[in-house]
Length: 403
Ligand code: PLP
Image 1 (cartoon, rainbow, N blue to C red):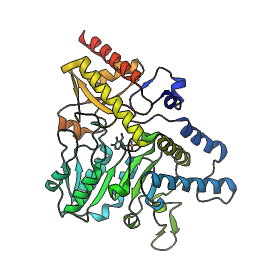
Image 2 (cartoon, rainbow, N blue to C red; image 1 turned 90 degrees about the horizontal axis):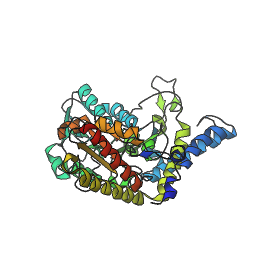
Image 3 (cartoon, protein in one colour; image 1 turned 90 degrees about the vertical axis):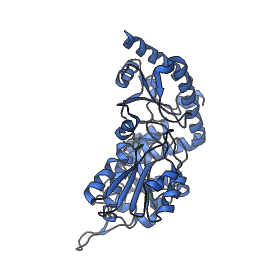
Image 4 (cartoon, rainbow, N blue to C red; image 1 turned 60 degrees about the vertical axis):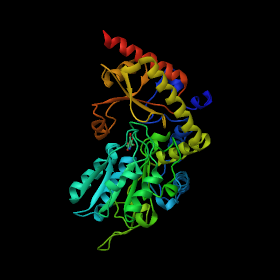
């Protein structure tokens, strides 16, 4: 990846020394996404689906164009795409709207890899409905094994929710194989894929994966905060109870039983974050321009080099978590004698941004038997110089805490 990509990110003009290795938390934004957001406020500033004047009609038309573009991006049809705020909201929507599908004696299956956003909603639903929550462990490489699903999924399992990519280990699951294995055991099972760490980094294809639902966040794939996507198979989406009720989703509010619009509008009550949705279109354009394959290879190449340099420099005193070979840009680690928070703080003082803690994945850290980890996540704008700076920063942390 050449420097022209980095030049597309205005933050590096304002902060030339910035080493941003926290794209797993949120990605930086390219010029086109920033311009799409400000362009909406500057040139349109109308609501969607309501007004009959020009700016309103143009805004509504552009909003629906983004739905079409987003649908193509995840291998779906436009009516299968619900705009949400983020992955968390998409999964909470499902928790609410699928509640009438589970009763006492049923089973919900999640995994030990999950981010809290794909764990707590299911834990709450299980508690509320009196269903059993089962947790599939990950293997030694940090992946879910399709062959092991038989031990956890059975005829009573109603929902199986798992992530495509671990936000801590960077392990990439074989989503198609996992869904095929789950459906072979129980054809009626509802599958939910958390694609938050996959989108923008590798191909996301709901049709190929054959998942029933999929959730992602725009801000993790170079788009603005405040917008996410929930994909749902039409046949299922149309039968779900709306998560929120209000304006923009109703056909008849005066009858005894309100009549809601069809999906996806029935899940989009109230004014959406229009600017963010338009920004998401630009982010999709950015990802498609470079290509997910090129982005993925760049991230793997950098994370692989970083892992090599880390072990060469720190030897046995560093433990790199997850797969033996890097599968994306995420690389989490612990260092002997230094708490991950201290590592992140020392690096932060040098403008090197990494994440430390549990990364909203306590069950995973518990499974690994560690209280916390440090995570560097590489993305399209990172370079080998960032690896040099990371290593120098870590040497500084080691020197400081040795004393
Ligand atoms: N799922 C995974 C795997 C994540 O990494 C994250 C965020 O880090 C989320 C879900 C939640 O995303 P958001 O905060 O955008 O809803």
